[in-house]
Length: 329
Ligand SMILES: *[C@@H]1O[C@H](CO)[C@@H](O)[C@H](O)[C@H]1NC(C)=O
Ligand SMILES: *[C@@H]1O[C@H](CO)[C@@H](O)[C@H](O)[C@H]1NC(C)=O
Ligand SMILES: *[C@@H]1O[C@H](CO)[C@@H](O)[C@H](O)[C@H]1NC(C)=O
Image (cartoon, rainbow, N blue to C red; front, side, top):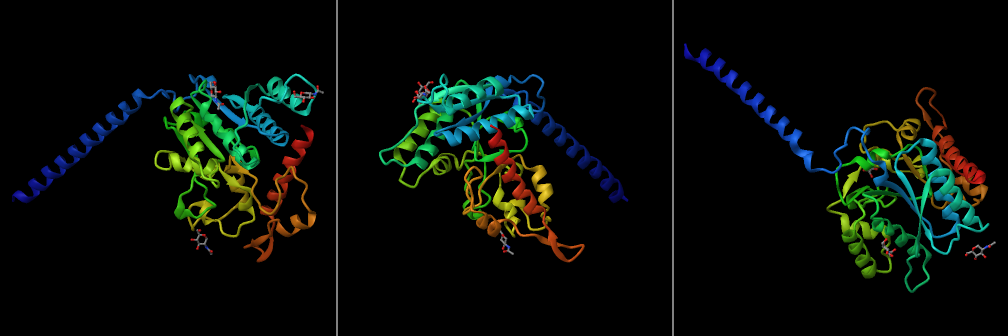
């Protein structure tokens, strides 16, 4: 006699309890971000974009050209954040040198702010080292609340303005998905940074203590491995070498999804040139090497033939596009 009434009452009580809990959670999450300085998250109408900048660092003329190309892309895509170039103080912006012309073009046509710097170096004349340390000077650009450092041996496919609106964190980076997944190594090709004196001092200390095989990636990994916000490498960091690979599990993040080179290209925002032993796209390559290393065509399930050559066409196309834009500049 009692069981039916008891069951009904208890069902009603359980429902009320669940509803009350959900209501409380909703209120909590509503109050959560109130202390955040990034209160414009989700809406970009009231954002002061001058607090944010894409940064490039330059140590030589070839890379200056790549950086100006990247700024041209940001300008063309209508990105709203500032653009900042850190370049060697020896490059004159006034005279007719290639460097002077490129810097003036960046400033006058693409709205780039110029920050002269001293190239960082250590006793051994190791240019890779100098490159990699100069990148870390982005932590010293404290006139900005946030800067996004992008490697310039890359093609920017879409604006990344939304990254500036992420919740506060000292550093946000994607993982280097192409390395051993068990190492969880973070990539330093795309680094979102909150510049500060405190963090820059830590960086300087790590540089001073660095071993001979420690470059910017090792420093960022050592300092931030437990505190970085991880950006999804899809869509923020894709290597051109992915189009040559026959195993896409690491990139896709699962073994179920079908690899579709067109879909991957259209979702990606940042495409980094990385195809060793194929040289970077501004270095003349031996045509035999390209012939040998270019992506092979995939099997087409509809025809059963190896006539799906989209990955190869994309790969050749992105190299060609880079070369053409560089020629024009
Ligand atoms: C331009 O400036 C650089 C660096 O100051 C200098 O080495 C070079 O001689 C100058 N070139 C001309 C054409 O004035
Ligand atoms: C860092 O920034 C400060 C202030 O702008 C500047 O005086 C200093 O030279 C910079 N340090 C380096 C290593 O560039
Ligand atoms: C593809 O790569 C994944 C992740 O590295 C690995 O677990 C898997 O065994 C590989 N598959 C093949 C067919 O080699």
